[in-house]
Length: 244
Figure 1 (tube, helix red, strand yellow):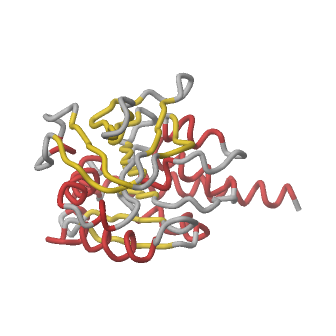
Figure 2 (cartoon, one colour; figure 1 turned 45 degrees about the vertical axis):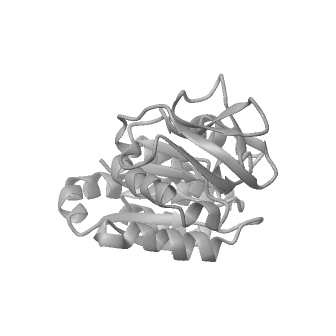
Figure 3 (cartoon, one colour; figure 1 turned 30 degrees about the horizontal axis):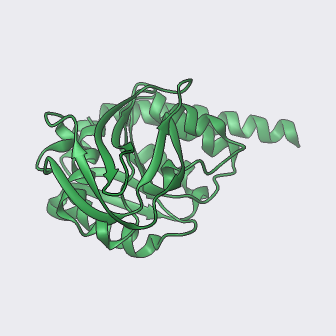
């Protein structure tokens, strides 16, 4: 039985890599119809339906920038990835299937785009350390009490920051994101700082892993961010940038 499962997993991964390679050849023509985004939500402590499935999907599909498929069922990831340009992870629920875990890593390694949203930047899975170490380049284990804080752009010329104010305030959870010195390097594009503390944390950043582009956005608890024009510009710019 174990041998059968191992062979099936290998078959799925090889098939995925082949489909990703074939899909890349038609990438430019598909993007003219909208960037194909697979958004994965679900878990605890957030209203995923309201803010990711409704608000963020509408933001990304505005002006036909993207065509978003949303799911809270991780088991669907494997079959949906071959038709995906950008994997938008916004979940903190477990992804327990090892084949799906390998497929997510293979997706980035194959040169595809990944956006890691607020809930997905946490240290969610003790049994999957490669996720935070390699794909995220670190993670958060704590945050400020929900409330106001400032976000300051540190790389204003970066394409993800187009149309984003140099400094803006919002109500959110200020994640204590810390890079992993043994993990994938990150390039910080914006930082977050509470008015009640001198501590500064990465808020928007690149993760240098694989052939694809990965962007982390630590903002995104509820309306205080998702309805904010600066946040909406960030996720639209992020999807465009990582899809290239």
